[in-house]
Amino acid sequence: MKLHEYQSKTIFSRYKIPIPRGRVAATASEAKQIAEELGGRVVIKAQVLVGGRGKAGGIRLAKNSKEAEELATVILGMDIKGLPVRKLLVDETVRIQKEIYLGITNDRTMNRPVMMASSEGGVEIEEVARISPDKIIKTHIDPLLGLRDYQARDLAVSIDLPRDLWRGFQEICHGLWNAYSQSDASLAEINPLVITVENRLLALDGKMVVDDNALFRHPDLADMRDLDVEAAPEVEARKYGLSYIQLDGEIGCMVNGAGLAMATMDIIQLYGGTPANFLDIGGGASAEKVGAAFRIILSDPKVKVVLINIFGGITRCDEVARGILGAISEVKPKIPMVVRLVGTNAAEGLRLLGDAHMVTAETLVDAAQTAVRMAKGEGR
Image 1 (cartoon, rainbow, N blue to C red):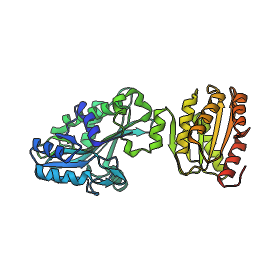
Image 2 (spheres, rainbow, N blue to C red):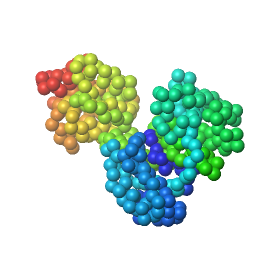
Image 3 (cartoon, rainbow, N blue to C red):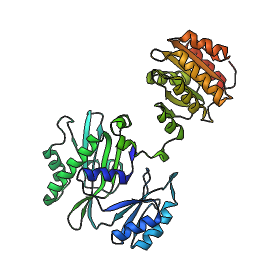
Image 4 (spheres, rainbow, N blue to C red):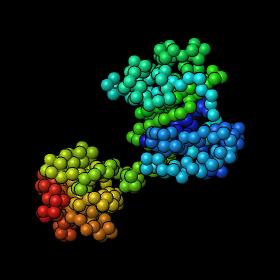
């Protein structure tokens, strides 16, 4: 889950990372008021979860509160790369002497976090890595020991940071590590971390990406989720505890178990079809949960047929069948579906579906082949 700049910087400030004074505004009048409080000269930043805000005109400098109001009116009406601008960050202006980069992410090859610093801040770190990889200094962090003081000092020396700023830089490094580790983040970066004319270090911009799988430990972070960047069916699926990812195919899939879902998608492609989604209803799914999953699949207009593949271990096949039939009576779909039920109470589930004249299959191969034929309009 990506966090907005203002959200990331709020978290940074909790860990004693210095940030500019500023607040979030949802209206132009709020932006004007904040600008007045900050002395008039401010930076107006669109809060959208995409890159290239500056090039799109989403970051502007206002010389006074009146101009801040005018610019806020323009930016709040913008659409940047398909995302509407609903909030602005109004920050005080900063006189910049030097821009550097500081960030942490996961290094999967080393199986541990890596902190990176570069004297080339203010630009995309990927571009620095492509053109001048030697200017990115890395230090790997043992998650059991955490970031050590000498590692932060080594980074400061390697990027030619003035010695009188080492202590402040070390504190920022520790703050970033704590924000990263205690938020279960997969990325935390400050770009740029600036040296001001007054010789202070300041996190001018911030970015964090939090591991979705850890959000149950962080309800405060879960509340920060921006639904504008997510497909509506995925938002609906989350309400019911379903794992759903929308794809571009024509065969909707409803399966219990992530591994079985992946296998189902693979076998659909093996026989010439394309899956429309990944959907794992999980173990022990109730009729209500199955019905919700079914409605979510059918909300995709590209779906021409639905393949339901259930292995009844914890999940009872008769419960799945009742969920399917309940959803059918409510949604009244006009597309065909193929059901494969195996396991606990499978006979009862198949009897219920048979009474409703639904297409069933004994094996996954049969089910996939039938679904592909139906998607191509070739019948059963």
